Length: 342
Image (cartoon, rainbow, N blue to C red; front, top):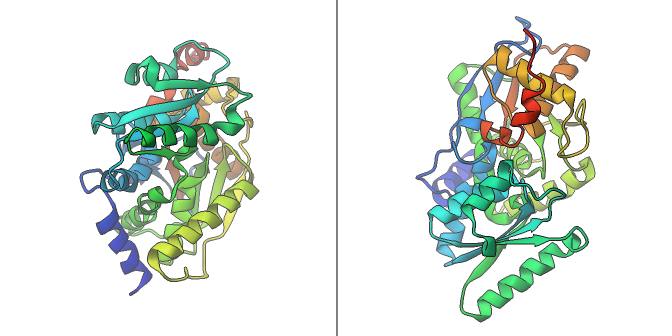
């Protein structure tokens, strides 16, 4: 069986077929340097699901069927108070009747804003357990102990690690490459360069592994590392590679796309924003019609802009918008302070 057919089989047999896994791709007008020989397209992962931030939705395509078929009734989530993954999963799981416990890294400011507010609207106080900074390195052990206690009371429980880093999300995250191929075929374009971003790296890893399966090895993939390091990304890539080879019961093709890691062009610390990011949020909205989350997507697009200015691209370019407008919540006052005069 060909690798393409293997990927099609995974898509057919491991995903929640009621959930959307196709996002559109269209020309990006404005903001990035425009060049007739290097047309720029943007992949709208933000449109996958109105209630889950962007491409994270793909993780749940295969995670939810695994939970259902395993008879899980209680799910332990791990993440920060402003985690997009914890917020997104809390919505998806609550709507399906799962019990939830969220182990949340205690924020420096307990004010209910942004995702922290929305999470508290979704989960009651007894469902959210704040873990101190001192205890946070042991959060996975705490989650394991919580699961054991529930199992002892005949409640089948499981843990979803921070960022959804688990084998169960693998078939779902591979769909981004399948969808990219669909976009490319519809547009009649072979992209020369792909620009995406990475937090835990799970979604970007799905893109790279899916491209290997489909034989899409020509484009260079530039990854803006909003969080983590190249070494950490590579470790996780190797783990998912092993899981995928186990799933398809055959070694992956050796050829793979070239990957280049990029540090954010400003506000390099994870979770940080500055005046530049806030001002660029306005510029992107005015010039492209896109309302982007500052922490990931604005930082990513601004970095792409700086890279293209330094090294003008040749050939068709594809930029991923992996976040979503929901990620803007909590930044209203800061964004308002940077309103342009004209």
